[in-house]
Figure 1 (cartoon, rainbow, N blue to C red):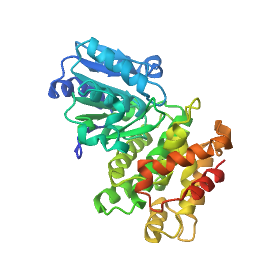
Figure 2: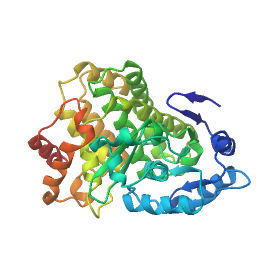
Figure 3: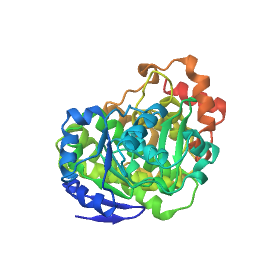
Figure 4: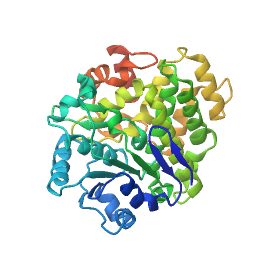
Length: 377
C-alpha cells in the first residue's frame, strides 16, 4: 500500500488499520489511550480498532468526545490519560476526536491553562515535545491527521486554534474502509469541508506552488471527477470513499498555506453556545457567498478552479458551488440551524479576530462580514 511521507507518515489504503499495532510499536507506545466518541462505539468501529491495536489493546478509552471539542472535555480526557499512566494517544473519529487527542497530548505534557498555548495569543512558541500521537480518521473532511493544528472551544468562549509541529501526529492511518456507511448528510458536510480547505488554500495570497497544486488536485478529485457526489449517493462505494479520503488529506496539507473568510465565519458560528453547528456544513454554506465577495481578486485562480471542476469559462464559480450544495442536501440557510439576527454582532466580532481572517484573499470589514452572514441567513 502507498506510504506518503510528507509532514508525517500517512499509511493510506483500504485495510490500513491493520498497521496500528506496528505503528504503536514504532512510536514507542506501550500504554496507548484511545480518544473517540459514542457513535463509533455503537457502530463497532472502536471494537475493530481495538482488535487492530494488538494483544494489549488500549490502556484507557475516552469515548465522550463532543461534536466540537471543548476545554472541559480536554480536562476530563487528560485526567483519564494520567490516571492510567498512558504514554501515547490515538485519536479515532472525525476532526473532533483527533483534535481532542492532540489537546490531550499537549496538556498531558504541559502545565495549564490550555488557553495560553492558543495561536491568538502566540502561544505556539510555548508548545514543546508531546507524547506520541496517532490519528485515525473515520470521516473525509477535516484532515486533522496530517495537520499542525487543533481547534478547541475554550471556557472563555473563544474557539481557539492550537498550532505546532509537535501536534502533527507521528503516524496517520488513513483507511477509507472505516468511512463506509457514513450517513449521506455527514458525508456531504465533511466532503465540503475538504473542498473548502482546498479552495481557500488555493485563493490565499501566500506563494506555495506545491501546496497549491495539491489543492487543485483535491478539488478536481472531489468535484471534477464526481467522487464527492458518488460517495454521498452510495455510502458503500469503496472507490469513492478512497478518493474522498485522499481529497481530505490533500486539503489539510494545502491549508498550511492559510485559510480565509469562509473559515473565519464558520469558526465564529461554530462556537455559538447551544447550537453545536457542524464545521463542514458551515463551510459549505458560506463558501458561495465568500466566492462572490472575492470575485475579481484572483481571476487566474478562479479560471483554473473552473477548469478542474469541469465548468465552462463563462460559468459562475459561486453558483456552481451553491448548486453542488443543493444536490448534496446541504442546509441552505443559517436560520434553519438556529442562528438568529441577534447573534450577528458576535459572529462578526469573532470573525474579525479569527486567525483565518488574517490570511484571507480579500479581508471583509465588519460591515462586509455582516452582509456575508445576511446573505446566507
